[in-house]
Every structure is written in structure tokens, then in C-alpha cells.
Length: 274
Image: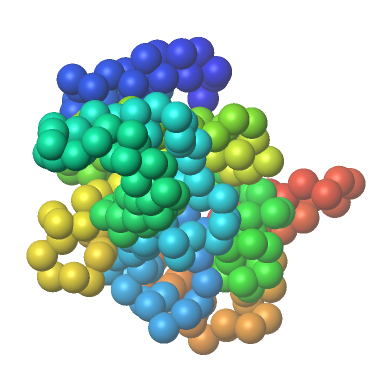
């Protein structure tokens, strides 16, 4: 995806009158045909591979401790809180109220940021299925797998809910988001990450906690699975599981690929094995 998308994306991401669903429609022109998700052979591998379950995590459980780490303009937030408190307690001395607000502001901001992280669930995808770093980080040191999703086969509700991450050296300024609590802005921090992670070319699906009814936090992507890539070490450690994958995917007509190393470089390539 070329960089021209970011200017358009930023414009609409900051638009308080535009819902995230509407933003998803705008970004359809920039969304890649396929996205990938690195995983390991854990207790849920069959549900991921055969049922198409995509787990949505809390932000607090993401691997990057700086994820959703935002900037808050304390001066502006203090002024907002002070004006709000003055309306509630007009009879109390304003100097006393201002000092009270100042003394409790850090605790209040921490509370708001904690609630922001608890309010949403997130699933992460990437444009790149041959990244050595991501195979090491997210796919059990190359012993896991990477699923490929054809986004055009997913329901529009899911597809429009997947938006790209913006990489930047400055934290996202969430002051206005917390002050207004506008639902069209509250998920914005999930779409900004440090430039150190730029190589991941990440896209995210973010959903509010309150729309999940079964409390299992899974999205059903089975219709979109269009391929699987097996890590460099996967056959060595998971041969029986891989035989099962090859058999079932052959029946469904889904390609199975094995990741290997280019003979004259450090780059990875995918070879279809079914």
C-alpha cells in the first residue's frame, strides 16, 4: 500500500462526525486484497485453522507495552475538569476547586486511560507474510504458521472494521477524545504505533467490549481463509498436525505453503506443497 493513503486516513480518522464503519468504507480503496495473521500451535490452533476463529485481545495484553500509550495535555484537561466541577459546585471557592482538580488529575487521567484500554478488543493483521522478525515474534520462533485471509470473501461488516496502523514518533494526542468522549474518536489510539514497528505493516480490527455477547471474543473469518504458510521449523515440531492441515485444506481447495530461505540471501519465500 502506497503512502498516499495516510493523508486521507488521518483526515477522516480525526473527523468526530464520521463513524468507524463509514471510515472503513472510505479506506476500501486502499485496503489490500489479502492480509495475514501469524500464530503458534497453541491450544486453539484447530479453531484458528479449521473454524476460522480470530481472537480479539485486550490492549493491555498486546506484546508492545507502548501500545495505546497516548499523550494527554494536562493543562487543557485540568481546565476542562475545573470548568465541569465549577458547574456542579458553584458555591465552593474557585481557588479551592482548582487545587482539588490539580491534586487529583493524574489519578483521573490514569483511570480514563485504563478504561480506554478495557473498553475495546483488538485483532492484528499484516500485509507481509515473509517477515523473519514477525515469524520469530508471533509464530513461536518459526515453529508456527501464518494464515492468509481474502478480505473480499469476508462480510462487509468485518472488512470495513479492519483499518491500517499509522506509524509515528509522536504519541497520539487523546486529550480531546477523553474530554468529549465522542464514540467516533475513542478507538483512535489503537491505530497509532511507534515508528519502530513500521516493518509490520499492520492492520487492526477493533471492536467495543459491549458488542460482544458470548464473552469469547472471537470473530468468524472462516469464509476468508485462502491459504496457510508453515514456518521454517514447523514440520520438525508439528508433523502430525501439518499432515492433518494438508488433508483438510486439500479437501477445501485451500493452498498450503512452506516457508523457506532464499538460497543466496536472508529473505524468505513461500513454496506451495499441496
